Length: 410
Image 1 (spheres, helix red, strand yellow):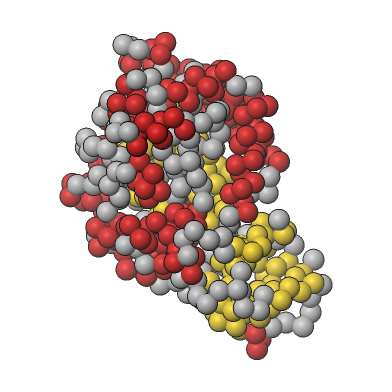
Image 2 (cartoon, rainbow, N blue to C red):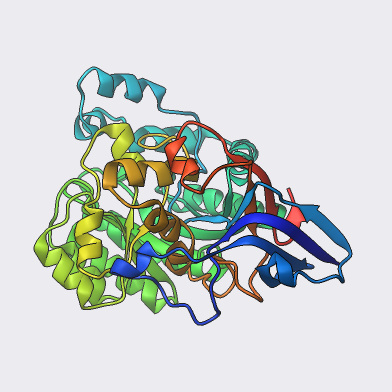
């Protein structure tokens, strides 16, 4: 089946097959074709160009007059499998409690752990599926989903099985991450070393054997997991053929970035606190910085210093961090807007960070992230708009009209 999309007002993120991850000033360029056509054959992008060169041979056609096309968003950091909500903590923060104070009172991650352990697998799947369907409609075509609210082998496997079921039942591309080192569960209180041993000696080997995760993650942060503990987890993951993506520098900088680069970690996520030594460490390796601007927005913490990273000629990815406690939204349109408004990214930089560069953060750059011949036909069509800047400018509006995943209208 060959479908022609014609009269596209502007077709964005048009790239050749050999495009590498974008760094520094390269992120300012978002290549596009005005008055364009796009040909989709089955589930792949087959051709594109100016309307004057549009083909005459096709099975179906779609008139895109006045509208624009952008490749699907790639959200490389989410926690959308969870039970219940943490609405009371939202009010607690308004009343002056900090993230750490809420955690020490049994809230935060541990609140979600208790709810998840008591939830059935069917209940978790139903709720996560509803969230995923909303995100697809908002333009996300590739997504990473973490475990991390179980903190026991049984409960973590339950979460990972839910993610696997989502992979099987939805056209969106899903990568699964095992985040056993999210917090210390109640049964290991006072025995953090014992919990790290359980992650390394029991959980990672079993999860790897079952093939339920693509990556391993840990919360490297003061009061959670130390640099040495995280290194042990990363090295264990590597031993079992799993790369790592690490939560780091959200509240404090404790010299973890250098270790992550040394261990060839795929991404370091959060980075609300970035010191010069961290910048220098990142420049020495291929670890990708990932900012989560709507987390900063929701819990009123500093934003990742994006301009500092780009001025150092580093790449940058933005993601949602969708989770019940600190970012109860996976709307990538708002992530793009927030990165522009609060992190001072240009719209071009923000879209690059949410598409092409984000593909590298999930190792799907050969299939997704740009309008490229041979890549998957996953993209969204906007409503009639004046320019692509309308998406971050009209930050409260849904400007996506139609979503296609793997060549099929959703």
